[in-house]
Image 1: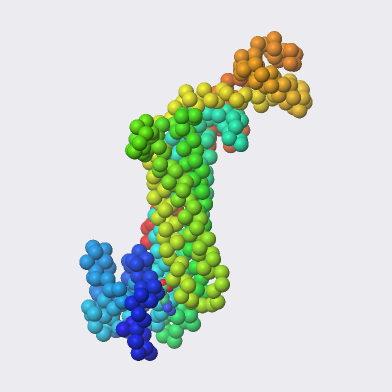
Image 2: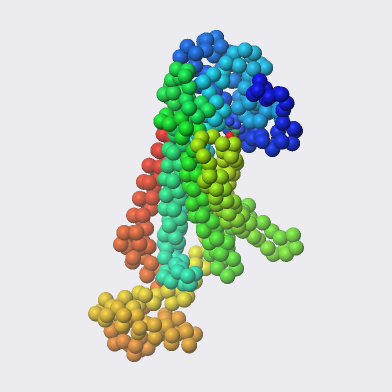
Amino acid sequence: MALWGGRFTKGVDAFTQEFGASLEIDKAMAQQDIKASRAHAKMLAKQGIISKEDQQAIDQGLVHIAQSIKDGTFKWNVDDEDIHMAVESELTQEIGAPGERLHTGRSRNDQVAVDIRLLAKDLCVELLQANLVLRTTLLNQAEKYQGVVMPGYTHLQHAQPVQFSHHVLAYYWMFTRDFKRLHEACDAADTNPLGAAALAGTTYPLDRAYTSELLGFAHTAPNSMDAVSDRDYLLDLEYACSVSMMHLSRLCEEIVLWSSTEFGFITLSDSYSTGSSIMPQKKNPDFAELTRGKTGRVYGDLMALLTTMKGLPLAYNKDLQECKEGPLDAAHTLSDCTRVVAGMLDTMQVNEEAMLRQAKLGFTAATDVADYLAKKGLPFREAHRIVGELVLYCEQHHKGLEDLTLEKFKKASPLFEEDVTRDLDPRGIAYVRNIYGATGDKAVEQQLSEAKERFDKDSEALDDLSSQK
Ligand code: ARG
């Protein structure tokens, strides 16, 4: 018979019991559940609501249960609907009456809320760690390949030459903003709902600030109904995961393109590639594709919870039981994908010549040639037209701009001199763009040092978070 045996004359049938249970998914928050129960019992004893002896018995029992769950010896009982019941019934079996006093001034409603908030914070820390691993790899690659030039694209058409490091650092900044979003999701979860009980608070003189302190929460929820019924902090987490997956997915799309025969910009390590069961020559970027593919499920997790929440009247509703699987899935997926992509980038080979060869194609120097004329006093629109005509000529005669004679240039505009050739080399073009944030050699150098500074700040912030746990 369930915990509410007093009111009922028979239990639900086996299938319905299973349907209504959340035990399987709750196992992921077993340690958080026990941590919160230990804090609750300690507070009850401090407030004189239970005796010191009862609290000690409860604490020992809970420590023992936590250990048995960790080493896999805990006997799960399918009759227990959720982790709260599983732990409480085992505790009562182990220590008797004191175990039955643990639930004083508490409901599973504030219990589940505190568990998920603790779990969300733990997940954020794990994700922030993975984020820093990836960013370390991006920084290393950007530093290692400084000076390497590739075509920059718009519309996936050759646009202007850029440094490979600059391209890599673009992702670095995206993941830096993801760090901030994940950190904010952690802050959003950092409020203690314990003491809200079922929805209305309780007549027991609970010290809510004390459990907040014991559990490392920065805040105590100011409204018991809000405390048990909202899950917006999980949405924040899922949103942060979704955005980071989107960034990973874009990067993976580039990895897939770059490792193709058409591009040949990178060669993935064998340890991050797979072969084909039929085509002996194949080497596939499976893990980049898989990461791109998994982005969909993380977006789905976010959409599922938004939808679950939208029609719920205050306060707790059983619908809320559905809110745990998505964030766990989103966080685990992002954590795994972030680590896989970091490994893939860390071990890939960068084919500098292929990048440079492509950087020369597609008239990537055209903007600089037009700028050359504009700097000599021609209105930019006019310069743009003249160079456009040169490009058309080249296309019709299967030439590049660098194949044109000075005479041909001069025919297009007398302002062209010998030194125009300087503006035709993709490396030169990339290196001289040195305003703040541009792809030039000095600008990228400066960007790198700013990126490292930011990394140090973020890793300090993560140390602070981890030490609060
Ligand atoms: N298993 C429930 C959940 O995960 C715990 C809270 C149940 N509360 C209730 N009043 N039925 O949400």
